[in-house]
Length: 167
Image (tube, one colour):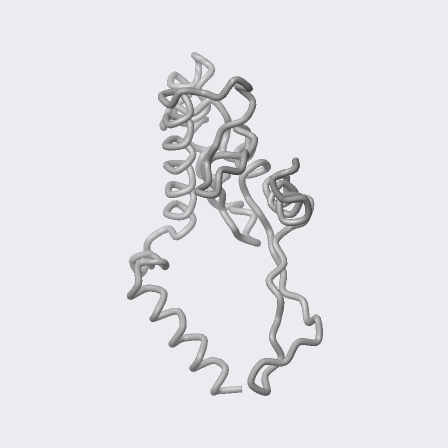
């Protein structure tokens, strides 16, 4: 339906104008941008966790405005994508082979990270789907966004929705 496609493009343009959507330059490696942004956010959160005074329970850190606790292990950057990033993983593995001397000290990439991209993506990539739950909005079927319910971050968020701050 052309109207639906036009509405979606208009919504994407609006998100971009508001700064909520970042476009990759044409011809560039879009995988690298999304992964780099998520890893930078992870670095920010880790830095924040080490420089902020911790609560009595070091396993928890207050991270949201409403005062709820989120496990420190779930703070960081995530990539919401159904892409498995095979090309990016292959590039990193090839770089590891080409630059073996950089990896002899337990570092797995030229960025100085201890885990490989493949390992990082297992923990930080959240797949998603859309489900038709029978809702109609302005005459159009409204699809419900469904992030992977088995991802630890999503499980934590869902538990907070169900139980509130009683966790």
